[in-house]
Amino acid sequence: MAVLSDSDRRNLEKNPNVLKVTGFNIAYTPTFKIKAVQQLSQGMSYQQIFAEAGIDLSLFGREYARKCLERWKKVVSTSGESGLKRNVVERKQQGDLKVKNLNLSKRKMPI
Image (cartoon, rainbow, N blue to C red; front, top):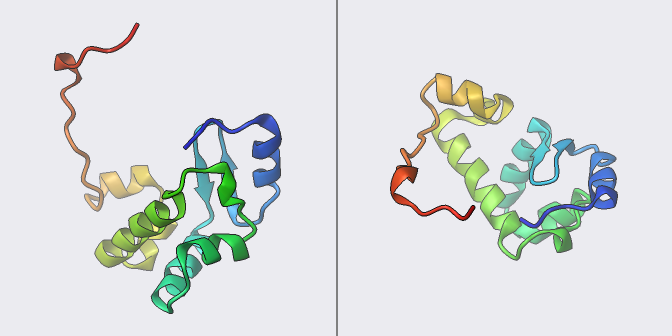
């Protein structure tokens, strides 16, 4: 996802389906996530779900909506809808979220 402008962030923050917006990340409400997963299972397209929620997908990469919904579907399949009501830290603590161990010491990082 590209860095959002101040104007884009303000517009997204006005959307009732959005919980929090930073320059690099958007947190959606649990209610929206649950509804979106249900709509997907009923045959709605990824793009249609976000469009109906008033979220402008032109701000994001081509695969943004699909990746969000696939991630949410995975949470529902492992933890049920209640998994979408908990934040990432809570899911990690309860073992519902697997975190890959990244060995960054071997990677050359730009300075």
